[in-house]
Amino acid sequence: MDFKTLGRELRSFSFWKPWLTILLGCTVMAAGFVYFMNPYNITPGGVYGMGIVLHYLFPSIQVGWFGYMMDIPLLLIGFRVFGRVFGAKTVFAAMYTPAAMLVLTYLSYPDVALQTPQTLLGGHLDLSENLFLASIFGAVLIGAGVGLVVRMQATTGGTDIVAMLLNKYMHVKFANGVMMADSFVVMCNIVVLVGFGGADPTLPLYSLISIYISAKVLDWVIDVRSNDKLLFIISEKHEALRRFILEEMERGATYVKSQGMYTRNEKDMIFLVVSRREILTVRDRIMKIDPQAFVVIVDAGETYGEGFKAFPEKMN
Image 1 (cartoon, rainbow, N blue to C red):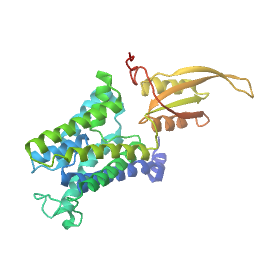
Image 2: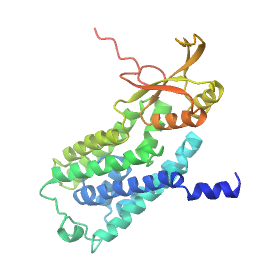
Image 3: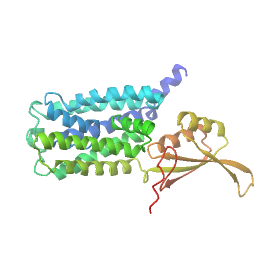
């Protein structure tokens, strides 16, 4: 690529749109934590939920710093294990989100050493008498923020990496891995904040509510209605698509013999199943490889087999 081409790309909105969207998504997510989760010790799973628990134990260290302490090692492990799966966008999102949380925290409290709902924004956003409302608003912002990041083919790191490791080494489905990691954070909330800190014993219930709502909002934002997607692809560029699926995605696919009804020409149709987090990346890559390709994407109600769910136990 020459300098003129590079200059044109840098001046185009299409180049900056993904980065600006990730910036917006991470900022929205950070606002959800700073304004609705952190002040009330509601822990909606993830690295930053664990950061809330640790902040309770070590009040002098802000949640954003705990985010860095956990995200950086997880990213390094991810690079070591998965290599190029973690691109510049994921690194940017993982590094920017804790910074956004720290900035919002210092701007929102007159004294960060005294972070109480009564001092947040001068007491204008005190929801200590309505934790249900706080958990809903926080979950909506977090789900929307993460959804915007995922739409740009990136992740915010954290429990996504943990889930990927569980999937690789223990064959745990990705969604179940995220749920396991989030459940562990909620258990820590129960032990530390409720068991030792004497917090409201209903607090973990608000955490579970926020986890459920944020997951639903995430699905809505990325416009995926089921966990897995099934693709039927007809293209003349089979070899390029084959390399992308096998080498870059590290997935398998199947050729299905088909025949055009009008031309009666025989073709090889690609049958491919991907997770909801992969569908946007796959769709955009197919368009880049072959803009003339014919692609049908449908919901896969349930998917069994290697890389997906195991067959259920036979019921007696």
